[in-house]
Image (cartoon, rainbow, N blue to C red; front, top):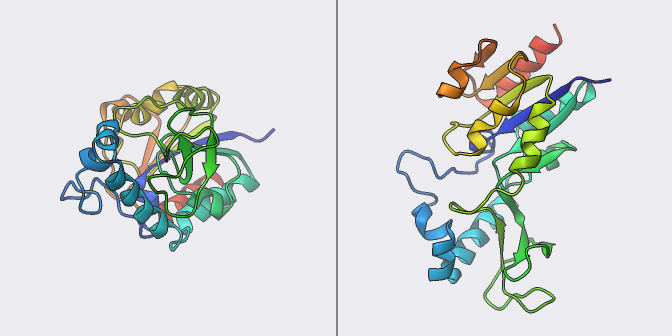
Length: 230
């Protein structure tokens, strides 16, 4: 049986493909305050602005490509049972070939009903006011906004609990509850943290068998693969 690697990825891995993160130095996300485009209050206040913001993000996503970090994680499936838990809403892991990807914060290329959250649709076009589900409710981006529950967290925690190795790639570990996911993993397994500017939080300080690789995902994932296959 293959050993299970659980991977937690964040914005850093996709930044190398050209996708900006809202935690840039100016605190803005594509020139917008997060509170204006990524909260339930923003949706209630100005849904047209929110839709346009995500339309732009979706159009950008369709014009970027996975990088060596994404491909490296997919390649690990040749030797390991790899479960990717991502904070990212893009589909670059899937496009790189990863077959088990759990999106904690939703998916940009999907839309869901505001009246029945079970109704989720693939969506690559602009999403506009007046686009409705089969029951007549307005569609919204299939995104977990700040202030909303993270419905996939429990499943992610169950995956972490079964990990033989835990790999963290491209995340500042500042966004909870996702940042605390490693606490569900067995304490005695190997942990690797790949990030060019690793943030050693109290969660990580408590892990004795942690190896930090201060590199971008494009080279750091390859380094981890080399360590696992000496």
